[in-house]
Each structure stands twice: as structure tokens, then as C-alpha cells.
Image (cartoon, rainbow, N blue to C red; front, side, top):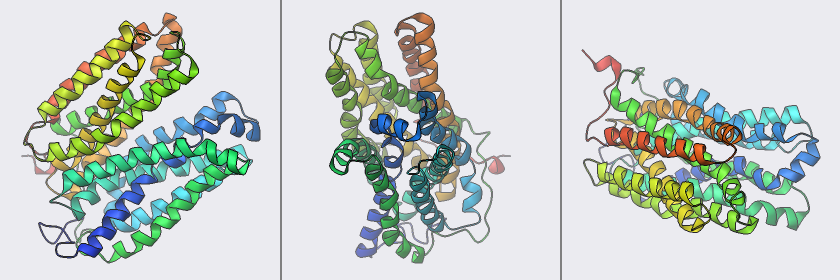
Length: 402
């Protein structure tokens, strides 16, 4: 996974460069839609499959566990197959996984969920490395576009679910959309197989970063921001409802988390790529996140839209910074992939604990005060590891240490 030119494989080739941008963005758009589309359709899907609420929850929690388990295997895969082939295979498996979630058989739905989670985990790790390989001079802009597309894909998955259900009279139509779209992406990825200098290395070397403190800082930053986002996305409506807001206002506030984060998804990587140290960005991200959580802890119903806006700004900024660190703190594409794999494997396992931990604290304490205090403490931890991750140095693989 190395480029033949410091300007990337598309230098002086604007048409194929545009095709590569579209291919990367379309792949990113398919990394969340097939997962989140089931959320608004919970009543219809539970009725069709005749399953309990806890059984349904596996459809959303299993993929996070797959992300954690599968991510660490991706560097091994890239030493055997070119990343373009792996991306194409991943898109096909996403389509198969979503397709299996259409049947009236719960074990097959679970199998489809596992396949979906495993395939998305592969692409989660591959795409930051491909961004560095395809566009080494534009990593900030391309990481920002990738982050925006990731968020918009999730937003479309949720936004289109109910209108398509009402239009066609079945929950299968909005779900089926996310089985078809990955196959359309293949039209743009097949030409990428001809791109030179981005294939499997001639002498693939295993890159290990487990002894590198910078890699661990980035890993925990990725994990804590994921813990933060998934916890807020899961429990913010409940927190607001229990503090006197109606369902409409609670839903509006929760939607703001994704919507407000989109411009920061784009802006943060562009700024990060122009700076040697990203500590000012880490600090700004911490301030808005901590302020939003502190307001939610202090007086949830006083200004719920303001608290949600600040939380959304923090979530969008932190995700983009984490993705930026993968490419800015690595010397080459292979290192970027190894760092992405390490950070996402541990990060998503940590993220899977978020909603469960907050729910347990709510049950034990009887309200959300202890849960939100935990989130405030973890923001301090996230700031600390982010401050370390923002240093203008690169990771050092274990085999390069004396």
C-alpha cells in the first residue's frame, strides 16, 4: 500500500482523481445507513420477527462488537490482498448482510448483522489508509469529506426510514435500499483496481504499534470519543424526557447532535492538516463538549437545544480529529492502516460499554446525575490523551525500536 509519487497516483489525472473521490465517498456513505435504519423501524421489525426488546437490541450492539474484533485483523488482510479488492469484497458483504436482515428468520437476521458489522469494520480501517494513499497532499480535505459523508449516510438512514415505510407500506423497503446501494458503488470501485502503487506490498511487513505511547494516546482518544457519542445518541432523549421535555423537543435536541456535527466533520481535518500540533483543536473540542455535558448535568431542561448543540459540536470535532490522527501521525499508508486498526479495535470495544454503563448508573442511582458525572470525568481523560496525540511526531512501529 505505497504510492509511486509523493503527489499520489492521480497526479495530472483529474478525471480518475474525481472518480476516486466519488468511490471513497460512496463507500463511506454505506458504512452507517444499513445499521441505523432499523432504529426508526423498531416496532415493525419486532412485530415481523416476534422478538423482545432485548433481542432487537442485538441488531445495534452486535456491529459495535464486530468493529472491535474485526478491526485488528485488517492489516493482516492487507498483507495478502490489495485494499481495492478488500473494499469491493466489503461492499458485497455489506449488501449480503443487509439482505439477510430482510428475512422473517431471527437467526438469519443475526447472521446478516454479524456479516454487516464485520464488513463495515474492514472498510472503517481501510478508508483512512486509502485516503493517505490516493491523496497524500490533500489528507485534511479528504478526511473531512469522508467524515461528513459518514455522518450524512447515517443521517439519511434514519431520515428516509419512516417516509419509505409510509410510501411502500413495509419496513423492508427502507432496509432494502441499503442492500442495493453498496452494489452501485462497485461501478466506481472496479476502475480503482487499475490504480498503480496502491496494491499489496511486494514484501509485506507486519507493523505493530502496541509499544508506542502515541499510538495508545490516539487509540484512547478514538475510544473515548466513540464512548461519548454512542452514549449521548442512546440516552439523550431519555434524559430529556425524564426532565420534563416532550417527545418532540427531546427528538429535536437529539437530531441536533448529528446535524451540528457535520460542518465540524469537514472543518476540523482541514485545520488539523495545516497545523504541526493540533492541541488548540483538542482544547476547543474539550471546552464545547464539557460545557454541553455540564449544562445537561446542571439543568437539563433550561436550554436543551444549547446543550445538544455543544455536544454535537464536540462529537463532530472529536471524531474528525481522531480520523485525522490516523493519517497525520503515520509516515506511510501501511502505518496509517495499522494505527487505524489498533485504534478502532479497542475504541469500538470501549464504545460498546458506553450505553450499558450509563444505563446501569441510571438504574443504580435513580437519576442521570452519576452517569453524567462519569461522562464529565471521561471528557477530562479524553482531553488528556488528545493533548498527547496532538504532538507533532509520528508513531514508531515496534520493529523500528532499538
